[in-house]
Length: 233
Image 1 (cartoon, rainbow, N blue to C red):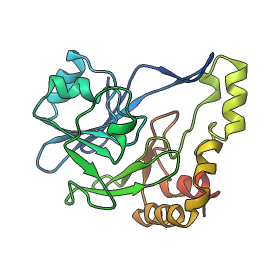
Image 2: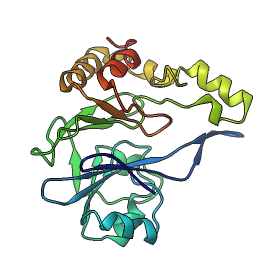
Image 3: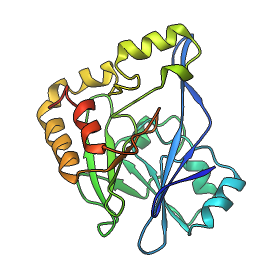
Image 4: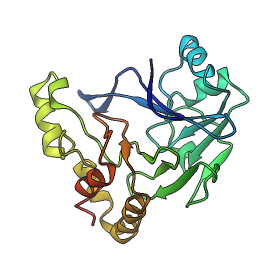
């Protein structure tokens, strides 16, 4: 279901996926963000599972022209959308095709701060040893769009006491969601670059911050960024 966030901005909360090692599989919520550019074209960021009904609902808003795989974990359904909408371009971070567990043909690499939509959206690629993530800032609505740099799982929605405990120990539980501890450690050798990236996000002064996992921040976006990234500042 399309949920309006701000003018020219929507989210879709998709199906749950399970990710982990061995027998321990953690349920991850999925969330797609849709940006309508001034041209009327649509950008689908971190697409959720494809369905013809969802596609029809989205195309009422405008033509789907861009499919964004913002990091090496958020790509799985991009090929399905590409097959259904072949005119759409696939944009992804460097190295995704090598790490992906299914074939994904990338049209444009997201690098540095070179936004494919400079009139509407700012881009910042944050490099880490574990994960490289493309961060988008929709200027018209002052909305920052993240995937895994902040995770904010709601304990009340996790049925297993063990998983609730692990989420809290990882530091990814609402109301103090952050990057999980293993990801924070992976930035140890890149703290200066990460600090500069966070400062850029703060300079954008976002009103809201959309994350892929858990409760997103509808207000006080800059304050939430300072809280969530205090480990890096």
